[in-house]
Amino acid sequence: MQWENLTATDFAAAVKETGVCVLSLGVLEKHSEHLPLGTDALVGHRLACLAAEKEPAVVFPLFYFGQIYEARAFPGAFTLRPTLLLDLLQSVLDEIGRNGFKKIILYNAHGGNYHLLRFLAQAQLWEQKPYTLYIPTRVMSEAGEREWEALRDTDFGGHACEEETSMVLGTYPELVKMERVPQAAARPLGRMGDLPGTYNGIWWYADYPDHYAGEAAPATPAKGAVIVRLMADYLAQYIAAVKADTILPGLTEEFFRRAGGQE
Ligand SMILES: [Zn+2]
Image (cartoon, rainbow, N blue to C red; front, side, top):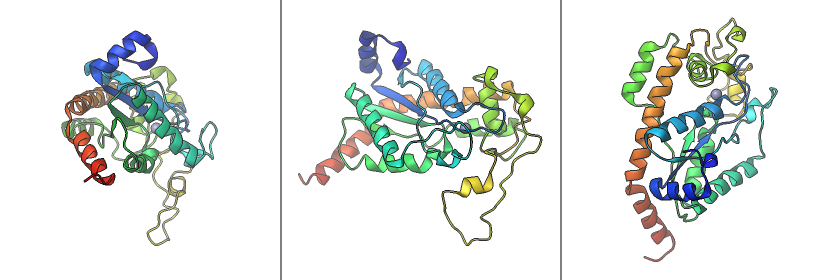
């Protein structure tokens, strides 16, 4: 069920029936020459909607705000001040919780959100909330991964690659411009290579200055259909597991009882 498509009365019933809201996170960023800026948000939201048809949950509307500072060198990237971004995400979670959801799934569709979301998760221990946050750490089952590995032609990628391009072909084929796929594959340039092991925010740009990582040419709609099925099935199972979960709410309750000094 899509939040924005429900009437107020049906929304209240959906909150009661499911108890779970799925917030899919994408960004606006360049995806090589052939995929739309909104790829992550569009695909993640579609997957969430497909999963919620199999295992009922309410899906939050398209959400485009996340960590994507490394794409600011390219047209169309949309970023927010770092502190505002964190405030925004927490406010969105709180407002979803105020609407009655006891469980919120953050379904990340953008690799660059990795550290942000882990920090956001830790920040939930700052203050007790009326909801529990769940961030899935995989996107398909192990069997699903094996199925996809057997099907794919490339063994590298990460951005606008065979996998991601197939995913857009499997969801929004009208937005893919296969004739614009670059001739050359994009492998990491290793431009930070002479430094002793170092983390710096420029690392992704250093490796992939054209915002392309992989080789999109072997992408097909058929491959996309397989990935979309595997990912939507996995997310549906994950939603069911979240509904059944009593462990995280129980541990969180215990934690805040002790943090509040009542024990
Ligand atoms: Zn992407």
